[in-house]
Length: 117
Picture 1 (spheres, rainbow, N blue to C red):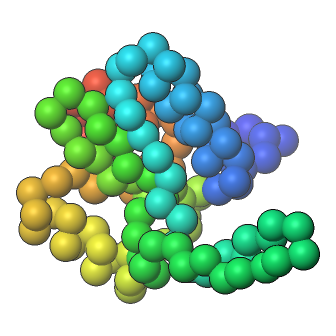
Picture 2: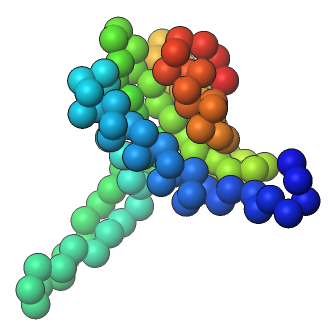
């Protein structure tokens, strides 16, 4: 990497991945969705309410493609999984599904082509 190149942030990686998955979904190649964990505040006019998201550690995304259910955790650079994320990964793999930590767009392409990142 050139010293002048800026490392990609996790939010930049997420934006790139989401844009690509949206294109693939519109082409009928797969279905995907985000799995947001934590609590959120929903505002409707003057009313606010707390909405509970997925449990801590849940992967960022899931992808349905062909006969595959793939869970994806996005991490930029040397970002590390939390203990909850490691536990979620182990559970998913015990159920026989795929789980990947994706650090680049190229990782995602490899996974979707049937390889391992």
